[in-house]
Image 1 (cartoon, helix red, strand yellow):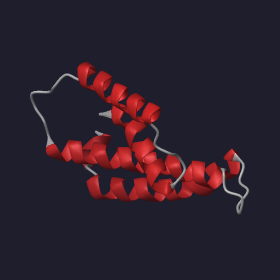
Image 2 (cartoon, rainbow, N blue to C red):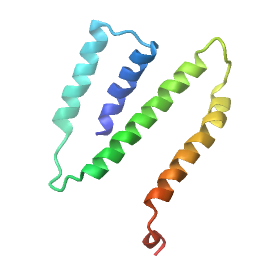
Image 3 (tube, rainbow, N blue to C red):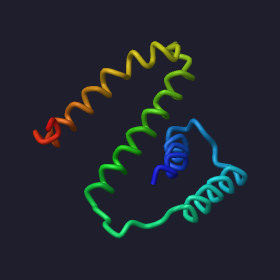
Image 4 (cartoon, one colour):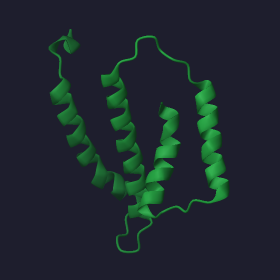
Length: 110
């Protein structure tokens, strides 16, 4: 499922206006989809909750990458990569801590 990050990132970049869809790029996306489809093997114990968490994680990671591209290439705000990371890291920590609190199991420490 992680192979879809390339496609999700490209799609979000298209929606944000950072990329332009051309025939060559569409062919590359289709090539990635075809290669990923051939490489994936199924699991006999599919869990929808795990699939949902993985999907949300992928969208969050791809949105972070697109946001970074947008901010770092903007003419209005001048951030270098280290300053951008300093700006984004606390927000990511808050989201991750919220998820940790919701899914905490005391048996993790045992």
